[in-house]
Image: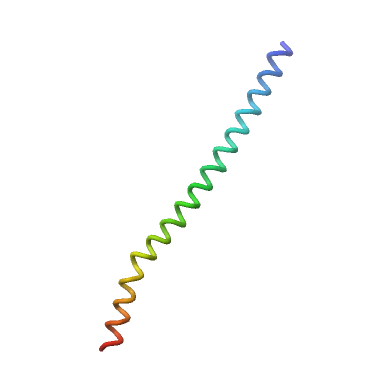
Length: 59
C-alpha cells in the first residue's frame, strides 16, 4: 500500500511538471506568433500608408 501510494504521488508530480512545461512552451509559442503577426501586419500596411502620404503631398 505504501509503495503504490509513493509511486502514485511521484507519477502525479511528474504529470504536473509536464503540464507546467507544456503551458510554458505554449505561452512562448503564442507570444512569438503574436509578434510575427504584428510585424507582418506592419509590413503589409506600411507601404499603403507611404503611398497615401505621397499622394497627399503631391496634391
